[in-house]
Length: 483
Image 1 (cartoon, rainbow, N blue to C red):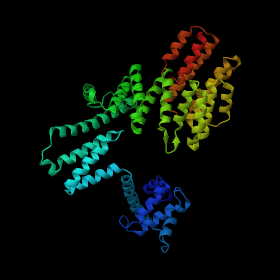
Image 2: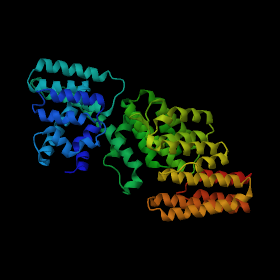
Image 3: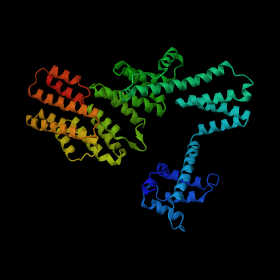
Image 4: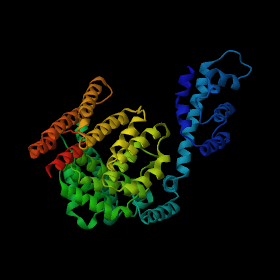
């Protein structure tokens, strides 16, 4: 039971997730005799709270904590401290349940209704059930859980002993079934979309049970469609086809037309599927998907979908800059970078900003500026190290088109990159394959520059290679030599 184990304990992991305000509420919770009758649990919490959120503080060493709690005991007793932490953990978990319920008025009402029914207070039970169903029905934006909640409320009412004496009508049972079907279809199609999105990872040649039956039922009842079910069905078909432009356009158009009516959760899930699909097509060299990707990212930013706990992921930031810069929306991109720079994780912020400033300079055609920016930054993170090496090679290739003396430098960099890939064990095989193909195709491109014959043939060779990093850029270089 070392200090490290104390820091890695379940108790400390739970407390690390709480804000200062939540710690204050937890303190009040622990001081309530209804929930806690042991003063030592409160004293342990109060001591930890003094150093929150720095739970790795040296004053939280096991012996120090024990001595604070038991000043008259000379010998350290790890079992005693372990038991206190165990019991305090249970109280923290109970607080989280109550705190969550306190902020969920629908769940509060559902819990109360169930208890009223259990206590056979039928009149108020029935009245509150009907009122809660009205409240749920009036919500403009609904999630799948809404229909399951309605199902449970209606089922409770129909199965209550006093209700069953009156016999349920066929209409009531049909409505109950409709709520359950909607929840099931919604969740099943979402799960199927997720399955298709990761099919290459799962490496299984199968389909989830009942998907085709659900599709048949949904398509046979066009007048009773739920918007979200329609969208998940379109996304599922798009992901399953993989290469169908018409299905992407249909899903993309339907999403744009209906996104204002969707809940934030559903909008975020559907948006990620569309972005991932567009990125997949971009990685295959289909540059037409850049504009679509850019629009999708702008929707996500406008709807505040990408900020998680006050942070914007490095990946989202770089993708927005990359697509916007490629489309020559330079002013918009520069404003975006200024606005969102402080939202990047602090640990990697400098690296992310520099690699994206270098990419922006590259898209503007300022290749020497690109090389200068990359040369002044040490990229510790492997991802940005790889991106830096790729961007530097591309910048020198672009400069070679203006100055043939760059040829030996480009070849030397390609060879150095090849050695780096062979030596580095942290790079996945799939990524290595894509980068090895880039080195091979860039070498072909340099030879083509020296002897520009049969541009169509080299274009077809590059276009057929997969996976291939930076395929659109390579193809664009051949296109420039064609005309």
